[in-house]
Image 1 (cartoon, rainbow, N blue to C red):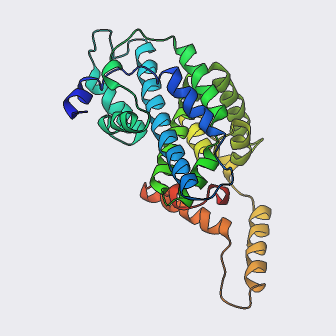
Image 2: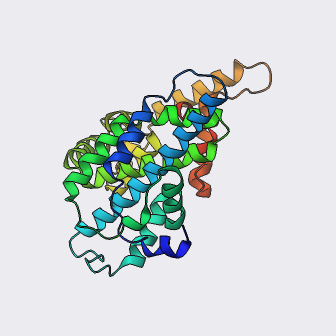
Image 3: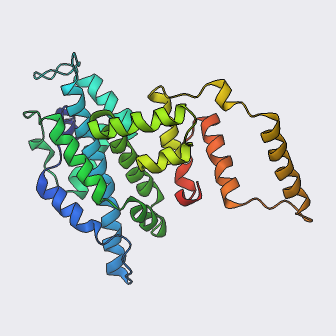
Amino acid sequence: MPSAVLAKHAGPLALPNLDVEASVRANFFRAGAESSGAAAGSREEALVNETASFLELLLAGSIAHEVAAAPGGFLTPDQEGEEELVRLIEAWVGRSLIAILSDAVRYLRIDVSKSGAKDWLPLTTVTRRVRSVLDACPIDEIEQCAATLGLEDWGHRARVAFDGLQAFLFRTDERCVEQLRIAGSAYARGHISVDEVATLLAVHPVDALAMLDQGGFHRSLELIEMGDDASAKVYERMRADRLSRPRAFEPSAEMVARDVVASERIEGVDARRWIPREGL
């Protein structure tokens, strides 16, 4: 489809139609299944391609509905503010909207020419649909499948879109908002750790930390500051660790992952695509 036609419909997107969603969700059950042969590899590649394309399109449509529902939002029924919406979607997905729609045409066989402006769905309906998709999507298996096939870029795209949809829920789903408020308040008082917040919210610790920061949940210096006794214990553990290594220092997978995440924060580079998530 020519770019001009795609661009014409790169405004407020309808969500992927239910037939497309049903097909993608049915494929979720194939993720992680043991298979072999050229045909199996082709099916697994299609699974990765379709999942990433679907999640990106769903994220784009969800953001469009969120903006349309916002009080005083810049999007109106006559499509004013379309350029701002496109920039917002591209910032969240990390790809151009033209590329998102092109993949929807290629891998999901969606007719983008019929996906222009439509009546907006209630945001609560969109939220329920996104929550249902995330509950069904085996994102870890999708990433592993992508890595096995040498499609790390596609696996990373699926993860970014998945994480973006999770963030969407924590902005629009009252249940998720309340969970974040309770967990954030407990964290700010020093009652639970970031890892425990991540477990409660079912997100990655790095994402949990970002949510806490965006939600304004911060600990006071008194809670952060390490006392003399605690510092002495840390130094003692470090000394014992060094003395227990007669040869060259051999970092653990956990320590390497921590260094990668620290470098990511310093450099502003999303390095998670190159390391196993279970190692973070």
